Image (cartoon, rainbow, N blue to C red):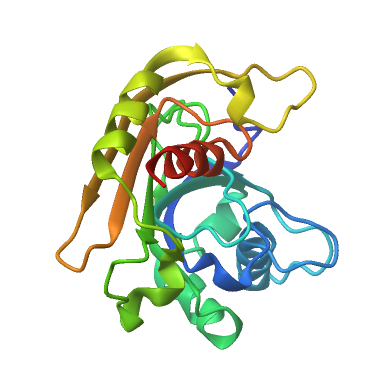
Length: 222
């Protein structure tokens, strides 16, 4: 767990974002990302032009992934920390990045680390199969599946994956990183329009693990 250095103050940031127009969370040269956009907004409040302060996040999301309850932290000197409020950061974001909203900013508890203090992560996937009614208001948050899905088969397949295990088959390999995870919830249900919703919870996820799990079970269901 990282420590706060010197007189720096650690702030906890709770936020949400529409990931449609972002290339994921993590900063990438020449690409619009959530991390880089939010760091730049905070730097503007402190008049920092060169190296912005760095954010640490509970879980890095991929391109096109949205968040309602993302958590991050940042270490700032006391003068800048006093100016970084949700109201001020949102005022900066509204001018150039209204697809990010900060819900709350405040001093973090002693020992808090957005990444290592998280007990679990939760994802939701919404799918619109061939026999469902498309909701135009949620279309950009729902993936079309050109097949009829067998929900009971999908539930049985998901149940087989629950528990502590090695999910290397569902991850993009990273050197030196473990693929052992505790998959705690993998549940499917259908709404009144016939759209299918997957809810997935684990202590942590490997790179692209959620997409791979959903895609594999959809293959079973179709």
